[in-house]
Image (cartoon, rainbow, N blue to C red):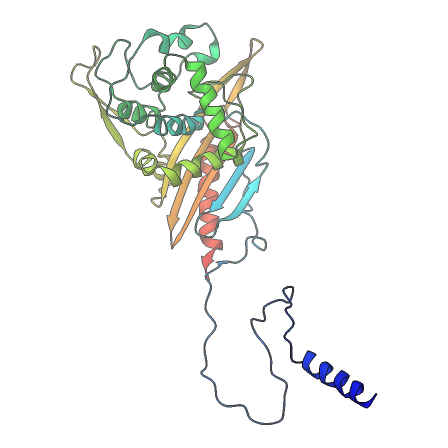
Length: 345
């Protein structure tokens, strides 16, 4: 009996020496030793690492007090991946010509050689002669049907600088293999792939159609994706002009100029780039005329901070019936507010 009891004690002692795995125990990253009343040996003093931050926190910042005119706005800081201002960012509005950013994106991702020549056919110009008043008086890059000396790159500059709807349709015709509706489907597919799922694009130019809509958030996603993936995008947007090849009307060639530079020209904000404007002075619904609207995608960079802003649905006309320029005004107010408010801390 005594021998059995002694053996039992030995087994208990041995069991206490067996390590027990505890896979669910968390890893201890920092452990405070109990106070023993004795001085601990000196340890090297390390300053905590400084983590840059956008200060003050956007959650604590006060939005600009000035009245903003755009229906939907989305403003984002690129360094800290932070939304700094948003209003009605998921509400649907017509995007107008900032939709051409998506047109450019689809071209860049489906054309290997931008120096290839495009076919300039009458089909690309047909929508302008359809009798739909929403397709009339479109901005153009002065392309002529039958030209054989026009490249994809020429068309991209024609698309973005003067906001050429003719360039948009030529690109859609060529990339869509002669089917502009197929190109529009490619636009919608790409938008959904990016995450812009609250949009519906119905043409390559941004000209008004009843079921053509997007949101400030969706157009931001499209703009930022293009900015991140394709350096040529901002190279084109920042160009003041581009030399187009000759045609019958312009036998010596001609210059097209950037129409998106209002933040610099009107507000003298030399730290900004007007990526793309959209401007429709009137729309027709059911044969009834309505005043139009303006849209804008832009960027600003100074003091180590870069902001991207997209706005939709600012009235084209002011209270006196004159061109308002309120899309530019809104972005100028937002950028001046942002650089007064935020810094890298």
